[in-house]
Length: 438
Ligand SMILES: *Cc1c(COP(=O)(O)O)cnc(C)c1O
Image (cartoon, rainbow, N blue to C red; front, side):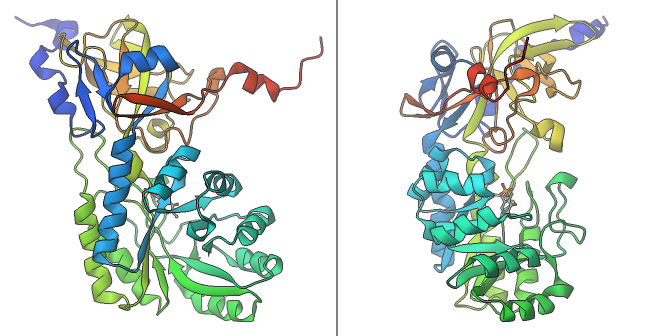
């Protein structure tokens, strides 16, 4: 008997997600309660939703800490003269800057706002590095006055600004375009010849000569960054080889970009495999006494975070659409980079019959589809849906599309939750609007 198109999209339970199948992409400290509700850091998501509302960014705090440690301890063990810089644009919450500093990481910031966040989190200035391809006088001034570790110069305008503003020697790391283009989404590739970031290698000697003439600009090293969500180790080996060819410097910063597993199908290198590859290459080609910096963002925070939504609508038309109370206002990544995520009904983790649906957001764009063709366990209005691995770049790019209020962020550990970012309120938005004259 032909089951027909509608029936064929209903799966039996064995084909639906289960906690065990989701385990590799859920936060490390996840579990299911006796009544089939997802727990993150020991906190039940239905209690989190009741306490903080939805949409909500929920982080497994111990998972964040463990991942940060595995990178910083792992690099130190292999190359003692090193620092791991948390690429803070991946999750720019003051609590995260604090957490990274507590776990032994330094911080890279891009822009005045992130620099101010790092300072607000009491990150020691000697562990802050400033990036940016269009730095302003204000940024350079605050960086210089705060005595941050180094400014990563992207262009000669940066160098002239530093020379004009600094009154004492300022350490500078020069960003070059490495000519290494990994196989990632166009929006995430920064290492190719057409990159807007960094200086081309054929201009390097002229720039080094220029630096020699500029007061208080002290060139200490070279930086490169090949891109993001890189799912192989080999491009990082090429990056290390490329930076070694630039010449001998005290500091080599090879950027970030280690990819993570988002879907059941993805395969991402482990932290150990990545560090082995980087340090093997460094041992071969870099001066033994050099300082090695890496700048992971996504790989520290992605898996530890999920987004918790409430189902507002289930529409069965040509397809089944499960529409939640968030969307591209709290997750731009799908629209920007085509990233695929997994999702589950968080109050029915193992139970119910699975149905293949389109999980969509509530913003007025057809592109506001959180995930097409995902198997959810008997989705109903009022259910809680968790989208997994949203810890990186989701909070970063949250916006007010359709008047959406940017969600709160909570950290959960040992069954206790704490709010680290408040939910935006309508008053926050209206405060910026001039009252209409009527
Ligand atoms: C974005 C960025 C990173 C971090 O990239 P991830 O993919 O999140 O690890 C590191 N360095 C620079 C310069 C970046 O722009």
